[in-house]
Amino acid sequence: MADIVVLGAGVAGLGLAAFAARRGHRVTLVERDGPPPEGGADAEVADWERRGVPHARQGHALLGLGISVLRQE
Ligand SMILES: Cc1cc2nc3c(=O)[nH]c(=O)nc-3n(C[C@H](O)[C@H](O)[C@H](O)COP(=O)(O)OP(=O)(O)OC[C@H]3O[C@@H](n4cnc5c(N)ncnc54)[C@H](O)[C@@H]3O)c2cc1C
Image 1 (cartoon, rainbow, N blue to C red):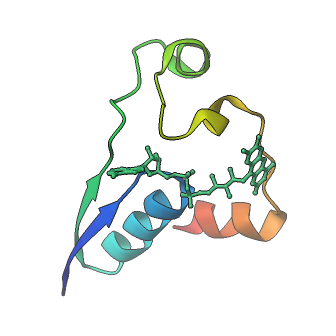
Image 2: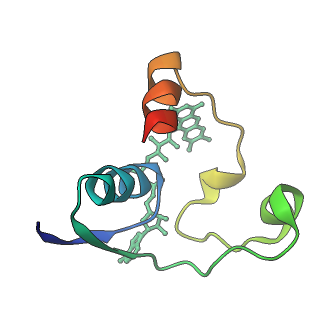
């Protein structure tokens, strides 16, 4: 088991953190932006200050394989 530090909670960092933790590694995820506001998805889109990922407010589509791998993990 390794200690892993992941910088950045975008899709790549979140994915790596989930994959590594599921395989027994101890993961610390470091994100510069603050946590989401209370109120669910609508509040996150409207009010979450994600200076590091302004594209988080844009609609995103993922290919089927990507969705299926993320669901499994
Ligand atoms: C308008 C737009 C539409 C898009 N639409 C699609 C789509 O439909 N489908 C698709 O597959 N892709 C789409 N993309 C591309 C996709 O958004 C990117 O490929 C993806 O977000 C990259 O993920 P990432 O985790 O590598 O980086 P990012 O999403 O950029 O995340 C990086 C993270 O690191 C954090 N960070 C930065 N510096 C530091 C630091 N020093 N310390 C700590 N944390 C830090 C940031 O705050 C951020 O949270 C789109 C992009 C844009 C701009």
